[in-house]
Length: 309
Image (cartoon, rainbow, N blue to C red; front, side):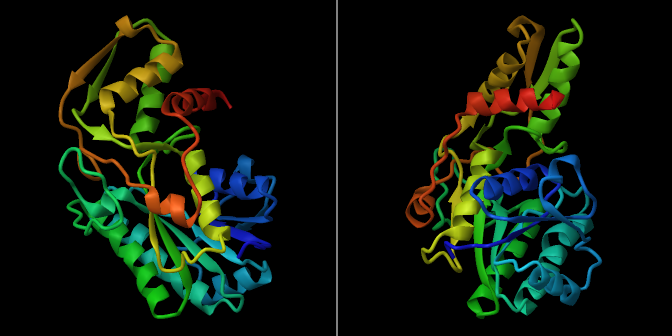
């Protein structure tokens, strides 16, 4: 697998997909960017316009063979505001992709991006490693777990060569609009343009945040390593539970907004998972030789800088 020739990135136009495309291209791997519609940041790659919600799996399998893809990366799936939308994004789309990968003559490796929230809430102070039994309590996390399990089940049956990465919350350049970093960036932009006091509701939670570029590097390593990663679940994170107030403070500093113009209000906030996340990343170090490289302050600075690009 170290001699990967081409990689298809499903969901290439999204905040994670754009960084995955860049990570593979930087390492010298030809990239086929797959998305419903083109985006300016995909101009450097071969682009295929496909909608996983409607394309027949057999047609997608032919595309993978036509493009000579040895790797497929699945970073599709929205945030979903209803149970139906989440089941569609996390279970339905993944199932269609699995049928296509299984039918592809080249037998590409599938790297599927899951979430740390698949484990469900854990006690404060706990390290979430891959031995923790999944017990999600939100619809988002339950449907994400169902998608990840479908990848693992298809691999166990010998239908595909699949691996699941469970990522913590992501930050860094070009955050997804529905995410907390995306929300925070919008509020900071508005505050920077005026003089009013910025009031932000912040949960009294501690969460592990990883730069999206580090996540893309982990995906690349899982796709190209010669190690026995087939059928494995691998957590990726920074391995540090950061108070949300501290994350906001660093984002405010990156935006250059005086702290006196910001007022933090402590209130419960809707979450996709629990109030404490701290990923154990030893398996990532062992199996794919990966560790995070980008500090949280640098990641939030890049997030702020991305707004004008």
